[in-house]
Image (tube, rainbow, N blue to C red; front, side, top):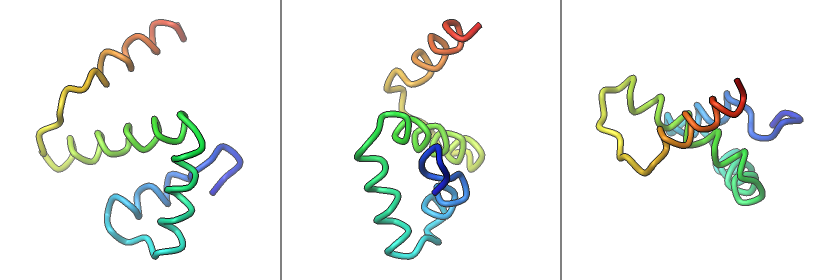
Length: 73
């Protein structure tokens, strides 16, 4: 984990089923603590699904990302 929360390598390991139990627990605890961590997980999950060609549910995620980008611009 980095100072910003769950590190990208750990999220990737979780998505690929390669994280050990301690790493998984660390990540889940982090997700439970903060919205930013859950957002990071969502983004990585969505990217992984898109790369693998899996259908992605439309839960408003794309709309939220666009709104966030507009606020940042």
